[in-house]
Length: 323
Ligand code: FO1
Image (cartoon, rainbow, N blue to C red):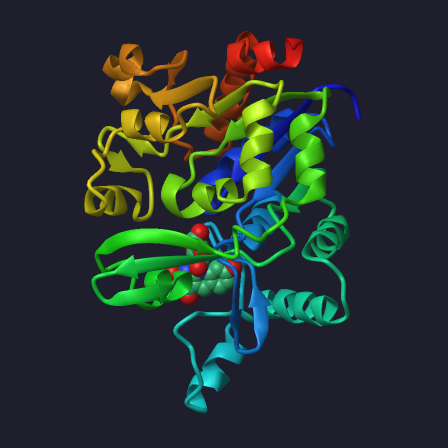
């Protein structure tokens, strides 16, 4: 490994697209992805880690391009039989995907950490990227809504994000230790940029930032921290980000996202559709095309974000490092 590491904080589908672009433009072993575990839950007796798995599948070329989650060329015999038995099928587990959850659960019960298991799976599938859960301790996103307090997947999948969000909290975050390998990556002098992926700030990035050690590590990192907007022209690229912002009384604008990360970021990337907002952002801002449809889009956004990050000094961080 040379001294040009890039670290990215990512949720599921949107973050995985940028992670794929970064992995395509960086030499093997240079990319570390720290993944949200707030969406993880126990289902049918199995531990399911949707964001980690979306990253695993995407980075190994196995992802389902239609859904963004789950595996390509999946079969659904398990789900069909379960349904015929009157079982719970609101959260769909494909046959191949099921194998991943069974093996992870078996290893967790045998005492292996989620970090170790994820590294093992990544090795089995030939990933050149280091994939790290934000924590080995449980952090669970809970959504307070007009229909009561809901576990994340109940809100997101079972109720299709329809309930009105009142507040969001991350159970276990106050006790959770950050993944030591993630802390090492954030602090390493070899790390040249830390990127907050265009994931949902409130549902996918905040569960990681709620872990004090991780947030603090970002705050003192010497490498510049750059966030990429998940909001383009007043709408979310995918998912419920804009709906949630409206319900929480936050203006649906990249400006709100930049402010949300205020004090943590040294640079912000916004879309060409929002170029007029550049001067209103408190940190240096780069305007570029942030929509990632093709692999070429992902690669070119990755290259642009890396060179923007490299062009930044991180004044706050540099000052604290100099003391
Ligand atoms: N999302 C859905 O909307 N419906 C599903 O049935 C579903 C199943 C599923 C199974 C495994 C997995 O890793 C992810 C799955 N997702 C499903 C996606 C997932 O719940 C969300 O996209 C993330 O948690 C949000 O990042």
